[in-house]
Image (cartoon, rainbow over all chains, first blue to last red):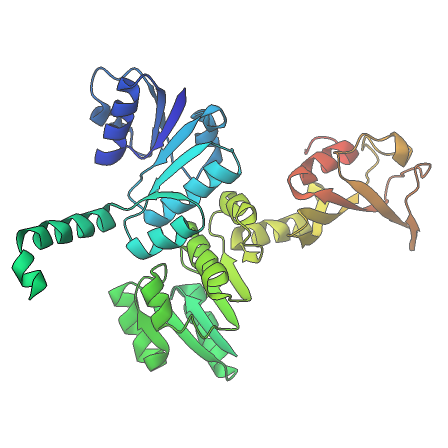
Length: 140
Length: 222
């Protein structure tokens, strides 16, 4: 099974290593050559230097053969566009996109994209934690 | 007419000024503090500060009315694409025109249904082709939705197509020769029409294959 991870920051690099540990063949794309360092010295997967909006970069990462893709660059709108290109142009089966802004995350999730919104997750879990700790305040 | 302009750089600010002068109602959205301050001095309450890819900012700009026209003219193609998608699909904005900064991103706009786009680089390249005769191919009309371009090609003495029947020339698939203009007259091209040096050939070709068509008729560029 082939996976492509676009964006090799803290999230992207950890997802890539996790998938590789699960037995996936993983190719990572990042603009910054130095981001390869985040994958560690034992990285055996692919690494393509370039911007994910550039289809020649996507094709060098062999997105056409990918069964899954994770899009987690540091730009919401970049992720939104790349995610749709991978879905609609390259027919990648599973595309997961990280969007930090909850409103845009909801809009694109309602349109059928698979979205992870860390901001919304943080908001919900902070609220849940505080609510669980203060049952009386909530009741009063 | 009510118009929202996203992006207050050179394009956005000049368009806003012109639309206001013509008597239209405009809201200009600019994110950067320094630019916003300058724009506010000139346009007053017609400019608001914020990131136009944020739905709350678009709502402050009046996207829900909705505007008759939205112009997404920031310097970021991703942003222009997302603004146009949100405007059209969430708020039913009939006309969203997006600026394409990098012509290589044009294909993403086409793929994602943002059919009304403007790319300065592509326009300038079109003019260059028009001005440089040895380039041999002039883009007369781009049919964006159809993915076709109507071009004019001038057949030269040494062109591979000179002296050949139109039906015998291997053209890129999906393309067609329409007419030739020779000695002041236009003739429709039939398979038996022989192309001659000096002919101005009008053709329609899928946009990505325009240079292949040029090559088929005129050979490789000099």
